[in-house]
Every structure is written in C-alpha cells, then in structure tokens.
Image 1 (cartoon, helix red, strand yellow):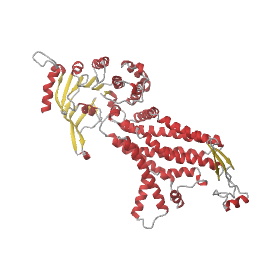
Image 2: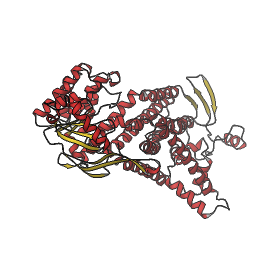
Image 3: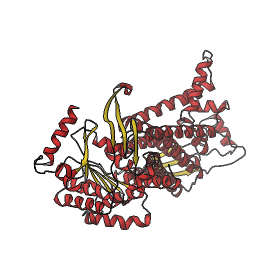
Image 4: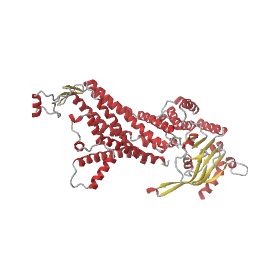
Length: 331
Length: 246
C-alpha cells in the first residue's frame, strides 16, 4: 500500500537526485552556457526607429519603402515604422521596415519560438534521454527497488526531476534573453514569458514518450531516437491536419478525414504550441505564420486551449503506461 | 517463508518459452537466525532473494516476508539488502548516496545526518565521505553497500555474496555486523559461495541445486566430526551431486 507522504517523499528525493545527475553529467552547465551565449547576443542588440504607434490610420501591414501604398501613407504622414537594427554590439547592421518593438519581438520570436522551442527542445530530449535508461539498469536499480518506496514514484520522480530541470533552464533562458534585450533596447515585452510554460509543456509531453520507451526497452538509443522520430510524426500529422482542414480536397474520404482528425487530437501538437507563442507575441505584425496553421485559424477551427489540454493528457497517458509497465516488471 | 514457490523466466518470442529458475521451493528462515543459502552457479539463489525482496513475482506459490505478504512494500522498511555487484550512481559522494537511500527508506530527516555519519565511520569511509563514488575501489563500494543496507536498522539483513572484493578488514567488518545481528536476535540471510564464511557466520543453511532445495538443516550437522566428511565442502559435495542428478 502506498501512503501519500511516502510517495511525496520519494518523488522529492528523486527530483533532487536528478538535479545532482544533471550537474554531474555537465548537462546543467552546457545548457547554462547556451543560455549565456544567447543572453550575450541579446545584450548586443540595438534597435533604432519609431516606437510602436497606435495611430488610428496606421496600416496594419508593414510595407517596403517603394510600395505605392507605403508612399501614400508617408505622404499622408501616417507612421509606418522602420529603422535599423544592429547585432553583435554594432558589428552587423540591418535595415528593418518595422518599429523598434517589432525588431525586438522579431529577435524574441527567433530565440524562443525557433531556437528554444524546436532546437532547444529536441536537444534537451536527446541529452536527457539517457537519464531513465541508466537509472533502470538492473545493476543500478535493484537496491533502490528493495527500498519501501513505491515503484511508480521512482519513475514519476525521475520524470518530474528532468522536466523541472528543463523548466529551470527555460526560465534562465527566457529570463536572461528578456532582461538582456530589455536593457539593451528599452523594449520590455511581458508576453515573451509565455515561452516558459510552452517550452516546458512541449518538452514534458515528448519526454513522457521518452520515459515510456526507456521503461519498455531500457535503451538510451531507442529512447532518444524513438522520441525524435515520434516528434517528427506528430509535427507532420499536426501540419497535414491543419492543411487538409483548411483546404479539404474533394477526393478525401470521410474515413481518411476522421482518421486524420483522430490522429491530430490524440497525438501531441508541436505546431500548435509554436502557434500559441506566435500569437502571444503578436508576431503576425512582422512575420509570416506557418501557412497551414494560418489557414486553419482563418477557417475558425483552431482551439489552442483544447490543443494544449489534449497534448498534456497524452503525456499523462504515456506516463501512466510507463508506470504500469514498470510496476510489475521483473528484475 | 517460501511455500512451494516457483519462478519461470519467459524466453523466446512473446515469452512462449521459459527457464525455471526456482521450482517448488518451501523454506522457512527462522527469525533470529543467521541463515546461509548455498548452491552452485545458476542454482536459483539470487532469484530466491529477488522474490523475497519483491524484485520479481513468483510464477507459483506464496512468499511471506516478516509476517506479511511480499506485495506489502512497507515491510521492506524493515529489510536491509546488500547486493554483490551493485552499480551505485557514480555522480554521488558516499554521504550523498547514504542520505538519498536513507530518504527513500523512510529514515526521518533529523535522524539521517547522524546515522549517515555513524555508518560511514563504521565501514571506514568517514574520511572519503565527500568523494565521488566514481573514484572508489570495488572494496570501498562494497563497504558502502553494507552501510546502505544498515541505514534503516533492519530486522532482516540480506547479504548476497557480500565478501566479493572485500579485503581482510572488510571481511572482519562483515563478520562483526552479522555477529551483532545474531546477538540482537535479528535475522541474517547470507547467500555465498565461500564455505568458510557460511561455516563461521551461520546457524542454519539450505542448499539449492537446479532451483530446488537439496538440503536444509543446522550448519553444525554438516561440520566435520568423527567418521564423517573431513570438511564442510566434502559434506556438501554429495548433496550437490544428488541435487544435480535429481
């Protein structure tokens, strides 16, 4: 029988152990190093130009200087933004057709929406894939399994430990780049912080798959590459679903359409998570959205809240299967 | 207590085949004794220990641990287990490992620090307490393994090939620990190939051959006496042979 205090105690100890493991394997310092590099880059960003305006006649789309509409707007003294961005402490100069705020948000979109949300999450999945298989090796875990700690708490504790470790890294990354950009440009976007929960959900959902593969196979290679492959499949299903939902082909059968919808709702949705950040940042002002997601939003079927909930439920289900498998596993 | 316990490990595709590691074992380890479990390689000794510790489930029969079913993990809080070849997390120091394992065993936080200090002193690792386990020799890891088994002041101590890699002082330490358990009326289950160790430490023994109990009785009954086999090894040989033939 499992008592709540004993389960909580075990999970707490496992989380603590995972942080020690991340420090010892240098993963903590590698990720912190990447954050420092990104923060230094952001500290070297300067943006000049008009601040974000709210002129009632402002045309919503930023237009190039030679566009006839832009010329008309300029002639009418309608503020259209535009300026210069320098990177690397003045080393590189870029002309931007946007306002200062847009320039900063553009950098934020790249850092959190592209670098961290795709590259960072996938690298974190790869780097942490070995934590559980190493822990579950018979020679490493038998003495732990002979302790009175409930078995399920060992897996859940390890999972939570890794997710909390990545959450800490996400806070440091987003916080560091936000602070550096704010100090360097004077532009402070609170919406940028939405990236933290989104990064954590994104990682946590796919790490649940990694945990399941680790329990089922005890192989780091399978956990790492199986999860990456699964991410690609989910990304493709997510994108295909939006594309076909926005522009349904005439020859698509009802069964195929239902199957795709079921796949979309059951599987995690990495494209949707990116879309939520894109919208939170108001990035449509200066950047194009993923066309499939854009088209899906236009037809009014996108439900971001439900999308996140379904992804989280998938992760909970995967973790539950992993725990169930581990609970009765022979050692 | 094992009552007609069997354990078959599935093999082959979809687990259709099976290897019987333990077959119909009925055995009682009396409370307050030092009980030796002997047998050749692949006799099923470690499987029997794993079954007792709920590391795997029996295919048949029932097992009782400290008066309760093995499904009740709470009784594990009263058991100490030292494994012959355990891979402790190499990133932890000796003190961190004992604190971690003590926490999982349910030792109260207030008791943890003094108990860890005392045990490190006891096993001769007090001066290496902050050193990562990665730098430890096999013998030092075994000493640490003994310390973690004693963290919860167990009523039942299970030692699986405990002297592997231990030097003379380490072996003496182990003998002292077993002697203390016997004096305190606690139970020790010792799995070993080293016969002089079993002879010196245990009151009773069981011999396991090919997954079955081939002999069970007092160690004294097998010790050299006039007209009998000259050594414990010589006394055990016909038991091993009989078990293998049967």
